[in-house]
Image (tube, rainbow, N blue to C red; front, side, top):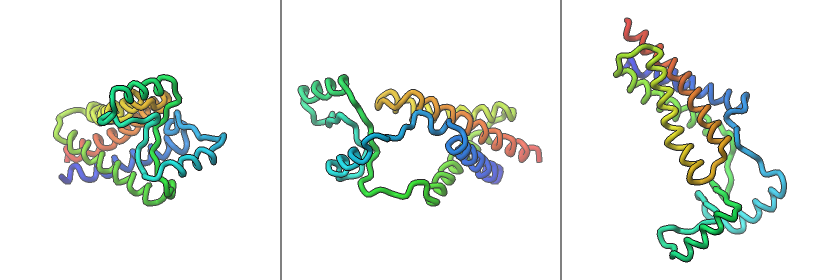
Length: 188
């Protein structure tokens, strides 16, 4: 376990630092993200008047579990005609980029890196192959989460590609840190 703990923590920190660079310095982390400049106040006012509960909303929406065949057909026609939207909605707002969010994100990335460190510590492979394995874990997460969001909810292609680049690069960097440190620990 000692062989995994420090590499996992430092690998997670490396991923966190890359995420900062990707989102705050480079355009990768923000690919496909757009601000609503025109009529934002009107849109927010309409949302506030019509959506009372926080949640994940899909427009046009229908409850597929209880919808009649006619309601499903109507919903499909609305989807085809557009516009469509996916909204992660919070009616009360929150502090964006808060210290608590940054700390949670760091902890999530350390936890992921600890999992990766545990997995690759059980392998007999070169530094490059171990780093590649961790990078492929990042690609796996992208294929499991972000690509289905594009497929099912219409997330922008550029956003999906940006997330893929971010996962691939961050976990390659994290993987190199983890693999190098585990390799050093094994030589002792």
